[in-house]
Image 1 (cartoon, rainbow, N blue to C red):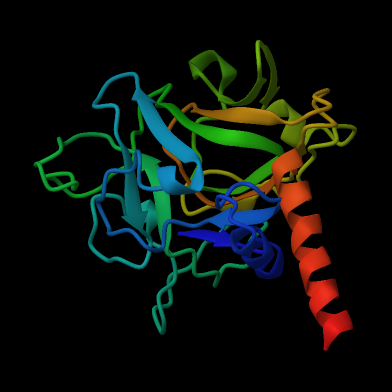
Image 2 (cartoon, rainbow, N blue to C red):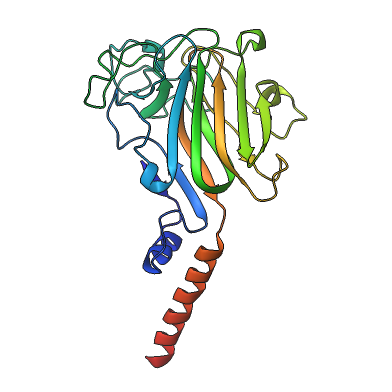
Length: 258
């Protein structure tokens, strides 16, 4: 689900006749409005986000996995659920965190014509697994997410990478940046492997050397993994700024007339 974290700004933008992405604010993409096993590509296009997957060995499908499910094809992605005693056993997220729906690179199965995979959702576990790409219709100034059940840290087998793009330029972060205490992306308490769940740091345009922001993020996975709770901040556009000032002016005029 696309959730603006700044509803007042979003309402102002919409009232001024602007698009959903024509304002500055933070947003959350958590996939809770989709079904277990659903293929994800253009579901968030109306919010300016397009998602795609690349799989080295299987179908190029980004698929929703509900971690509250039981007896799935991937037990390592099954998190705590109500009174269920199982929980994330490692990582910097509390072991009772309910993550709900997550995004995986599907290991097998095909679209059956109804927008769902024909077999149970299961993340790709090969080395390397593949990548997930997020393309934005606007510039963003930062990006972060949760990494779950990640098992492919070996750089010789693809490891992990996050590449951001701005125009013809790109910058890449690899897994070693999370374990280097001198890195701006160092992650305290990071643990990976089966049943792990970690919140990764915020990757900002300024730290990556992009003054204006970036519009594409590719996450490369060296093995089994899921991602969740994608958070980003939209760079203000001139249209949004003008619309916002105009709306404030109208509201101010009404207050003076009252």
